[in-house]
Image (cartoon, helix red, strand yellow):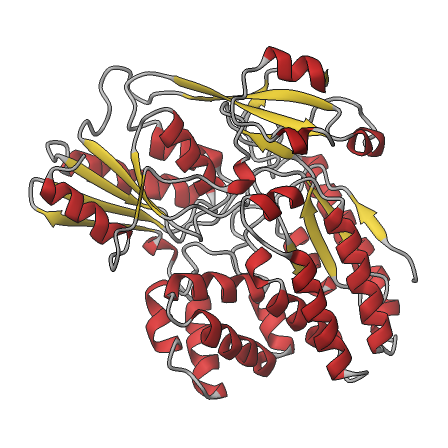
Length: 481
């Protein structure tokens, strides 16, 4: 099947923050599940022909060119250049060199590893990801909470030794940054960072060099306990409390269980002066109720409303069957129709908008994001709230940090979050290898005009020689807040 299959999945739960709003569509919707299953079946049928194909270096170079053409026309890519300093042309050139060096010896997994290795810094930005057809089918068949690492057995089962080699390569590159290493490896093998993350088990894995130990540790991660999703601690009795939420990508039962844990903890620390919320390894999606109700809604004494500003190109309009704004999963539409770009910019004071980027845009529209207080006038915690951020904070956590900062709910400390926000993706199947990749198409900013794909900037960066938690504790001790 020598053609590019371009599927714009309007209700893709595998991609950040789209269609996870309870006020619009949810992953339980009958139409949504049907569409996910049909997409997976199409990929599987096409794969039967790809499996029998003999791949050459020329085939893989053609596939790489197709991916690059799609990325170059992707809306968030300009942000990658000026906000993230990511040079995807250099990444592509390095990938081409690796393909040519390998000659005709590469199979699909070898090609995927080359893409993972060379585009590693591009993961966590603009909904970019690369799957084999089996991985993609598994993700599509299990689109909502509960998917977690279901695809991991398929991925690693096919090539555990290649997964080990990939990990060793990433360890060499990111060994001094365990959180980054954890995130990059989890992305590379298709895991979703969250309760199932390597987390505290990263230390022994950093020392792994042999296959058997690697397999043992990886399978132990896959058997992680759901009940460990929320971690609480009293750092200083009566004064400083700590709350870590590993994942928002959980079932409704798990969310209700977590809610009980969180609310009980809030009662315990009611009189404390400081609450530190750690979202540094939370890069998950799907459950807006968790973010806006369980987490933020408990910390505010009145309802809060913010707006997002999204932009589309003429090509985006032409490619859609219904020429009306899509629902961004973080809120509800404030504009029911596309507004011409000049009028939209004139009506909205987006002080820091990048006008060079706007030259590509044809229309704009707004999304309203409202978080309701769970107890008006009586929040569960009234002390100082701190949120720890980093490069693996993304998707719903990015939305949480953006909202908490803009609504002045918390002080953010750490690093800039990643750039996986609610960009509506295109899903493209490469014609030779059958690899499936995603790239974002939506350009969304806050009310200042700053793109969410550029990440949320914390109020304070880590102090030299300190991580985010150490920085906050030092600030609290000094009274620097």
